[in-house]
Length: 415
Image (cartoon, rainbow, N blue to C red; front, top):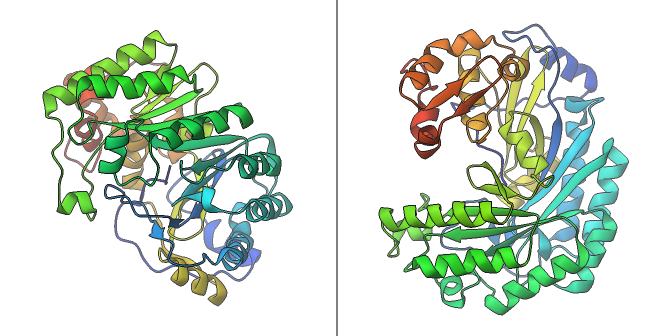
């Protein structure tokens, strides 16, 4: 999963040449008062894929010719080295290698990447290390090597087990390769996620049910089930296919809720379902407004300091990113979150969680008192979108159904 993009106008980043410069820049007094820093994750972006899917709005680029693997790994290491002063003394609890298609990476490249991370960062002993992988790039020996290098969780972009739907989605794999990929994951990893989409072009309820049942039959520890959406600046947005109507989509959602619950999957986030003990810790850190350092082309970061919260974005084009690293500053945009933005930023993430959050987490992660959003909380509660007491704040069933409306209530003074 790619971190949520920054909100607001970005300003050019500053080049920081020393740890002392970082301390002077980011540790000075400011508008916030964080009593403790949140858990820290690392996101690494691999920007290349075999073919750009028509629905994809991620920062991915079709590999034309040989991928500059070693040059990019050099850039990632240098990027991380330059970022270390921002995170001195902080342990990394989760790592996510996303894309693009990271499973295009050679076994030797993954081994080098993991070695670089261990040499530069203090990793938690139980660090969750996830890599995205797509069927069509699965080779059993290579995935055994990934595991031996330290990857302990896969997130597999299946999308569908139906060959016709895979063609409609522009995927490079067929239904047989999709099943073979899961079999390789089962043989090599104890922990993995299957990504599937529903409400696909011309998909029937029975076809959606068959996709979910096929996935569940493999007994994956985690499922991510996404409603296909037409994202701006994608081929599907320009040439939209025929999609199921709202009533059929709602029937699919009801079917998914029944099937996942009856098979022991807890629905803990909008699109995430897990067997007990297998929630995605990296993604949970995003949704609980934790911190993450993002390195690689187009990666985003959210980093907390005692008196401020910083967002960064790297250059998106792989060559521009590598050139910027070589020039000493891969960060294209950098900004501090304003005090008035903290409520929306926090609620945008935490309201995605079905079980909500403890009220004291708001001040802990934002450095702002909860009464800063009292007006919005009251309005959301009055509309039946939010439940709260002294122990818990969470979206109601109605709030989950109209989540965008609920989140929007915390933007500015419109509540």
